[in-house]
Image (cartoon, rainbow, N blue to C red; front, top):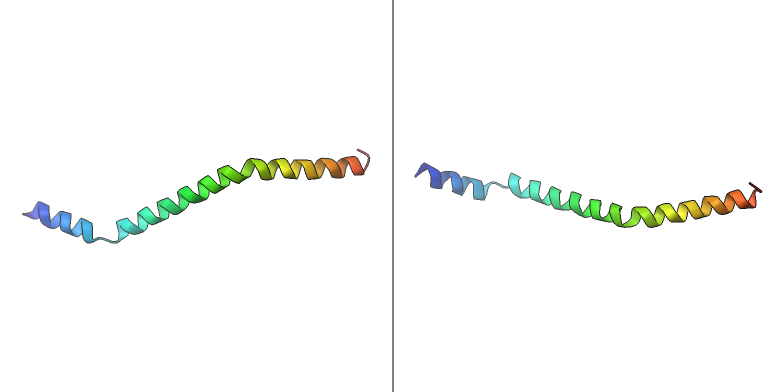
Length: 57
C-alpha cells in the first residue's frame, strides 16, 4: 500500500509540473535562437560589409 501512496504523492506534487514548464520554455527559447541566429548574423555581416565599403576599405 505504501507504493500507491507514493504514486499519489508524486501525482499531487507540483514541483514536477514546474520543472516541466521550465523545460518547455527552455526548449522554445532554444528553437527561437536556432531559428533566428543565422539570419540575424547574415544581416549584421551585410551591414558591416556595406559600412566597410562606404569607408573605402
